[in-house]
Amino acid sequence: SCLDHLAGVAAALPEAILSVVLVLQPDPTGKAGPMPDPDGSLWPGLDLTVVRRTVPGVSAARNAGLDRLGDRCDAIQFVDVAVRPTAGFLRAALARLGEAPLVTAPVAFQESPSAQGSGAPGGEATWPAYRVVFRGFVWSSLFRADAVAGIRFDETIGPGTPSRHQAGEDSRFLHAVLARHPLAGIPFLAEHPVARLPRGDLREKVARYAFGQGY
Image (cartoon, rainbow, N blue to C red; front, side, top):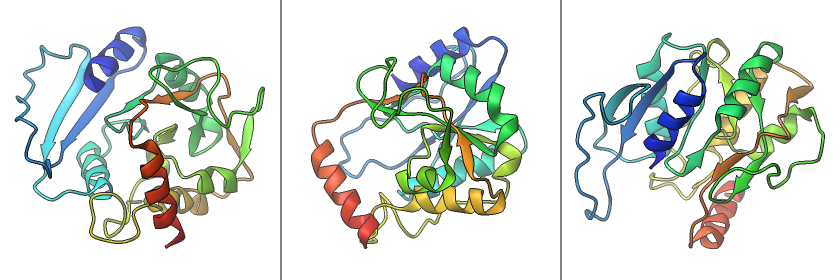
């Protein structure tokens, strides 16, 4: 369903080419069946590459995507399986990406984006850089590819690792980007929230991540 959504975004954004690196991680439950390697016809409009990993870990998966993209693209977004960016967000972010190493947007924990996202002050055009770091969501931002060249996630922490530090890899990545490109404010697209699908264990996940960030 994530790839179906991105194919729809690609169709609505003809001025850009979406290069998607799909990083498949092992299923710890063993219940998920194998996903067929796409032949290009399942998701038209996507320049799709599949990378299969035998070791789990969100940070390592994102690094694998960065390594595979190389210099193939101008901008990068980390789209987790439950993230739903819109063509409007990408179009607006691309238009402002020359101002800063990244452009960020509100987060909406719902089935699809709406005019408002959680934590989105109305009409705000910029966010303080420190606020972007401490919020710690990379998937609601679009990064300039040259601005993150050589920067990687810490693969020893975060979801999918044995570390008690089950969060914070996003904040560390954001801090590294903004330390390289020191700015007081980051463009904020208040009218273009990025949706993340709701989940039944969200309360438990927030508690687990809060402990991880504190750790």
